[in-house]
Image (tube, rainbow, N blue to C red):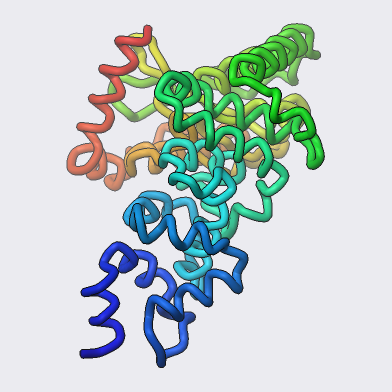
Length: 338
């Protein structure tokens, strides 16, 4: 029996991790032991390795879309994911939604990054506290509802060394600090200087039942970020200078937006930058096509050229074959939240 087959038989819970790491592991030796040495050299704690033996590694697959593909990207993603997860503690595994909320502060499946651990390690003290709270049945749903806001506040306001009072910190007091911060941000948005007059206030949305609304001022930008639980408001300075355009894809009938589109612009050019869904989730393929088409439409308007060209077949095909269910689900959610 080969060493690989023996690992599959004896520790099947480690197979998903092995599939990520095997390209960088030596060919000889017991597979599980080789993995353990590789991870510990990379900074993973022995307690995290023991946790993986208990809970398995299937959870890692759902977070791989956060990572940019390239040479050995799976091995790098596997190590990085473990380091991010262990920042919440190793008594139990942090739930996927908590990892998603943290990682979306530095990237997302629509705009993946190569690594997250080094960009978010200032939050280790806070993460350890959150990892304990999430194990509490009463606190878990409260934290789930506010995780995006907490991490957004933390990535802009938290600093290394700020954790001296963490032992006395409660979730209620943390959420109060976050809410006060959000109110201050909204107050600043209300009195912010007006932006340059946009080229258009609406673009032609080709997704049935949706409209493309151009964000026109700081308050609208802040509200878009709040409703969609992402960091659109960080684009305030470039939007106010006219170098960035944010477009909200919204149901015609009202309710939560479907996606937010970011477009870089100059005086006579527009270039697609990114599109993201609620809480930085991946968007359906037809929404990706539409976001890029909107950037082309804005570019043509800036050039003073007609923008009413034929709808690309790819958008129609994706809408018909791939995403109508996702769009329909969004319409139902939007109707409930309206």
